[in-house]
Length: 615
Ligand code: F6R
Image (tube, rainbow, N blue to C red; front, side, top):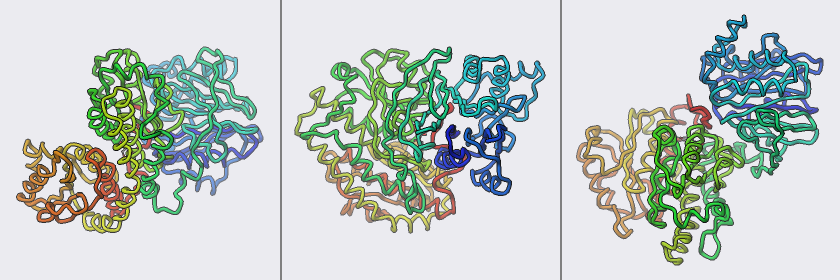
């Protein structure tokens, strides 16, 4: 969603802001703008609806005076459509202060009425302009920008990150946050603020997190953090491990293509340093070690793709660690008054670590006395910091809006957690844990094998680019894969797609089958003990008999599917719980290639944002 950059230093702020906004493009947005205090001491702004290129070409045609203090924003519309007027920055009534905002100010209507009654006028339909006008009014009351911001934020309800600058305070940018992301980048004679570290990673890898309900003031040589009441708070500096080039396309046609190809590394890097002598050792769980032995229940929370990795975690954790696991969508959990005990562990899964629905669900779990663990891909993210412990996935920066390598890394982290828990609770013999780890270690090589089928999948996607609806079926761990395959297709190719548990077919969905209806079926290996292979093949026969066009993902050498399948995509043999790490890959590639065949932007699908920072 909205991307935010702030800069103070000795370089061109326009260059830093545009560079930062470019790196934040992946968050998804529909307009962009900057505000700068020029070297002559003026406050200038420029903003345009549309992609960043609209703003940059406008700046090329009509250059903006540059300066060394600035803020930049990409907006994902909530209140008011994506127009030039609604784009940020917004100005105070006297035009001397500029403000950008991410989040939703829930009480904006009453604040706006208050300001209208005082004679203020508004030039946009946004909730954000209300904050700009309020801050301008408070600034005139004295005490400086940070103090004025402190008086404004306590009046706001909802979630927000705000950044502001004032013409009378060149060399100063202030920021505040509540339930919305903001990170500090520490430079040499310059400092940065960003929605995430991508905003400044090309300038510095030294970062500092800002806690909830805190205000930050940056100058070229200082960083001050206070609470909303103005009392100083300490913050720890950390080193960002991502390398700036990792968030470049690196010669690939899209970030998504690059990220799909990086999946062997996502598994290997997430395992790195966590496996010793055939056992998993997650030292990051030290805070929770007392709970793990006597744990009575696990609730896994996430949204979208993250929730599907959670479903897979349930299968593995229950089997290995013998603890009941429920998986729930964060936004459903948050509002149903869940019953939790002090022995409940709530695991949240989030690539960005900033998804608002998941963040507030974690806060709800903590308020109800549960202990919390997060699985996050982004270092220092809010959800990670608000949880009692965090297992970081090491997938590297995921830029394409549709999640691929983060999903694979989340499954890996959940499986490592399941095996760690099984050791602590002594529910699985050491030899079985070691065997599972051997399986997991072999997955990167097997994913690399599946990736070689890309040309075949591209051809299939090309033939199917005019499909109106595609269905996906799977049983057991194939079911979350079916859901994920359908989600990828919906979000990238805008084709109606549904995933079903194959056992559910005769309870309704089979009515959808008509001659020619394409159906992907995820088939488990026939070689596993108690395999569901025969059951799935019988589902295939049922849909084939009704004219479905059956597209099968099956193990190398599985001949039983051949009589019914129009197309078979092969995966190497893997243990039953490990198959999803392979079967999902052809579905990711299929969705990407079908979207490409339709001429769509696979990295930034319409209406979507990478990081959903509003409820
Ligand atoms: C789908 C996708 C989304 C995210 C979901 C959660 O491809 O990317 O469904 O998985 O918005 O995001 P995170 O993991 O950042 O909490």
